[in-house]
Image 1 (cartoon, one colour):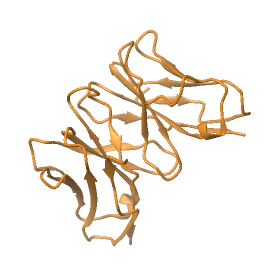
Image 2 (cartoon, each protein chain N blue to C red; image 1 turned 45 degrees about the vertical axis):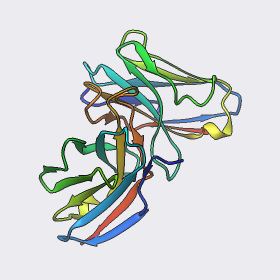
Image 3 (cartoon, one colour; image 1 turned 30 degrees about the horizontal axis):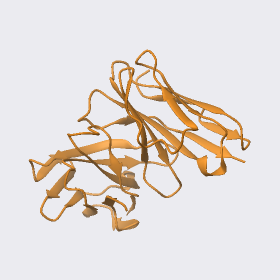
Image 4 (cartoon, chains in turn orange, green; image 1 turned 90 degrees about the vertical axis):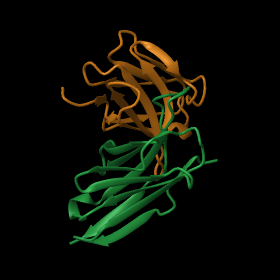
Length: 113
Length: 114
């Protein structure tokens, strides 16, 4: 497709459940980013891939969060044992390189109940 | 401690007038700045950027100004249109370590009244 595709759009998880969020970036974009956006705030950096290499994971809030991009295209953000504070919109973005504006997906809204 | 701040949560302007959105940053290592626009239920859309070697960048109705000594940037929209009503995010990144990673402000909601 022409844009960044994220699925699912909405996810409701029971506390303690594991979830997996998928991102399909623009074809050919080497850089892929995951951001977390809480209500009323700006996106906060989680992690960054260049092709399949995870170059920065400094923003992942805990070891319950894990991201992968095994073939340098599709990426998955996994959250284990979800907690209520994990409720947020998770945004994926891709770009041709590191000094370009991102193209964001529409996000996955995660609600932990 | 927020490194990128947008101190005005909201701004309302009349159609046809100028909209000025402001952003301040604290980290002097930032040297690339971007503005994004976000409609409800969509991801942010990249609008315009500026590198620290410039003080102005223009793209159609949108102009970004950078004052490095004041660590301040602004986005001017002239003339404003009702379709410009959205949340605007300022973001900053650096070329050294963490290149590509952006730090975002909390956004300013712009309302353009017909």
